[in-house]
Each structure stands twice: as C-alpha cells, then as structure tokens.
Length: 138
Image 1 (cartoon, rainbow, N blue to C red):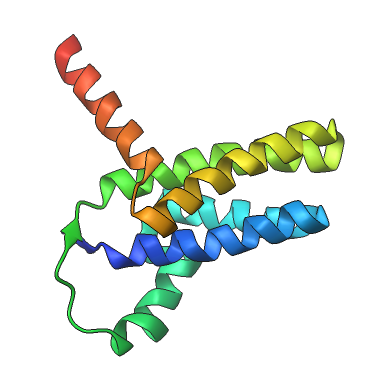
Image 2 (cartoon, rainbow, N blue to C red):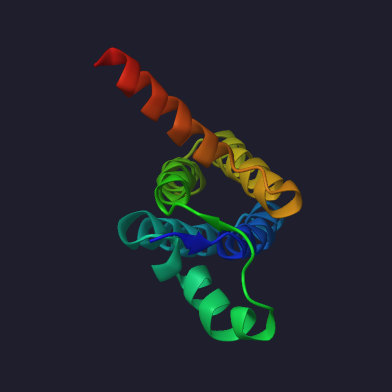
C-alpha cells in the first residue's frame, strides 16, 4: 500500500533538526535517539517510525488529503541507510575518533536536508539503483 509522500518529508525535516543539534552539541544521547528512530523506520516502515507516527497523529489531520503517494520500500531503505550512518556516527562520538562521528552525522544530515528541503531522497534513489542493478543481473 502506498504512503502519503508528505510523511517521509516531514520525518526528514525533524531528522534535519535533530542532526543539527547533534552536530552543535556533540550529544551522543541525541544521536542514539535518532539511530533508534532510523532503526524503527527501517524495521517497520516510515509510517511506524516515531516521526511517522507524529505525522499521522498531529500533522496529517491538519493538512488536506494527500495528492501524492509513493511506494513504502524506497523510504524504508533510506531509513536503513540513515541507520548505518547514524550508527557509525554514534560509534565515532562514543568510542572515537570524533571526526568519524562528525563526518557520518554530517552525511546523514546532508541527506535528510535534501529530502526535507527539496523532496530529493538520496536513500530512495539508492534503492532504485540497487533494484535496477539486481534486475539486470538476473
């Protein structure tokens, strides 16, 4: 079942704010929260992530009906990519080196910002490339 395309973009906006705060404060705890949010989004889909639930309960009822839908698989894959980068960032912030935490968190921030600001989901595009490559390999 397709999902409201505004939901993942809302989640990306919240993620952008969270990751900016992580980079400004160096808070491993906040990055751990974001890593958990990515893990839940990757495991259950973006509609079951904390930000997806927030969108469903508080934001979507205040908006008009959706006009654009998307398949749930690409955003779910994007959550898994975010999980990877946030996990590496968490390792960098907690165990070192600090530059690794900053670089991985910065990469995740760049991807979230692109989605939130321009509707361009890097993880979704990666999903489509991987899918095309696997079809060609068959």
